[in-house]
Length: 324
Length: 245
Ligand SMILES: Cc1cc2nc3c(=O)[nH]c(=O)nc-3n(C[C@H](O)[C@H](O)[C@H](O)COP(=O)(O)OP(=O)(O)OC[C@H]3O[C@@H](n4cnc5c(N)ncnc54)[C@H](O)[C@@H]3O)c2cc1C
Image 1 (tube, each protein chain N blue to C red):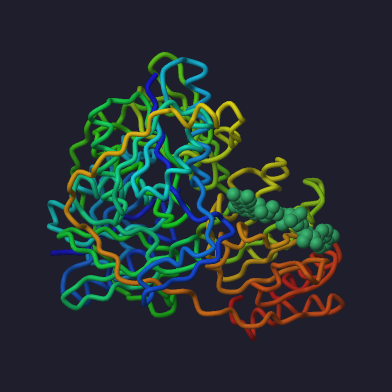
Image 2: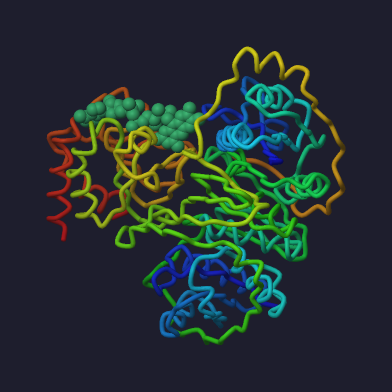
């Protein structure tokens, strides 16, 4: 029996959230006495895939069929189910993302597996298999027992602490996995793909600098972008900002946008409406810059600065540059 | 075109969450329920497509009678009829199994729902339903147009957007800006009262997961205020005090 971990590959590298999933799966394998096996789909070098070993995986199954190069949740789920059957895996781990949820869901239906998405910590395994996940957009947690034979866990960022200085030194063995692909998973014709490949993705970012209506307009975004680049941060925004087209839709954070869990979230000119907070309450440290001392966001913040964003942002950028 | 729109009945986005009965039940006191905001987008687009191409929109809810006001609202917005699978659903797998059962009996061209419910935030029901029916599922869909028997979709991918076209039938998880939320008008509210709402019993499904208890996050410590004149000290504090930089 092995714990099977589905990883996402972006531009030939394993995504950071997927590395966390590997560490998470390896911890469970340690507990249950099995192997941690990774399934990687699409184009990636063996030297990259071997790195799964540093996070605790023993083997990597690599399905490199060219048809799998483009993200396709239908085919990916099919290959995942095939790998789970072949490896006799009873526990399957994925990192939470649009793709992760879609693959997990379809695989769950194929394998008749109980599925829990949004898991925030390691499971408790003692006879029963119990997991805790985030619900009500971070306002609460739910603990449930998974009863099914095959179990699928979709984990949130930071569900496990990975200490990059304490990684294993052994690489994983990479094996080719010959998947049987079905035509019915390839009925869609993919048209245009717009992807800002240079940008850090919000769900993976350790630092996010985010702007609200207090930024006054798209032409005033530069000070925020400067701070983000000085910190190596991704950029986000509130809903009205993306509704007004000041920033692209995929930067919209909150209840109806992306849910993020960075180490540092810096909110610039965002009032802190409950729907916005719902998307950021997984952050480790929240910094709020707002000229209104009564802004509700301060109640959810760790550090607050009352003042004009346009005066404060350049100071922070300078201080961040001085660090390096 | 036959369209099924699946809606959730969830606490509104400003609801304060707490639990009762030894942390095994949501405290519903003072909570206002709404159609899930993402489902509302799906419904709005479903109604527009019906207006464009003819056909019918059926709304489906898997859950108890407390959702009936929200189902009536969906009918007032423009759905033609409704089905409620009468139960207290345990998990996504259960809900998806009910939706798939109804869909098998009625064969829809499109099954629309929100990208996720805002209570459990799982975002897996569309994928489960798609696989159970053996048809493709895509999410989160931000743009949906139909031509003949082909759907053209724009959906969000990590850090960007992708367009694709695929033959119907499809299951789609929706989000804005696929459409604008619709507010029912007086005529809609009047006609909704007499539109059919069929209540059916659930099909049986093996227990996949069993809820045990709920909990709340630890309360947040006080916010440390930094004077604007010393803003730059924040960066040091993040490094040495909060140890997150
Ligand atoms: C169903 C529903 C879902 C929603 N989902 C989301 C969601 O997912 N995400 C989201 O963000 N919102 C969401 N909203 C909207 C939310 O309620 C708020 O309207 C929104 O978050 C406010 O955005 P904002 O803070 O940028 O703007 P505002 O509320 O207008 O706040 C602007 C802030 O900037 C400050 N400011 C102005 N000028 C300056 C300056 N020079 N320097 C410093 N500070 C300044 C002001 O004091 C103010 O606090 C949703 C609403 C509903 C009803």
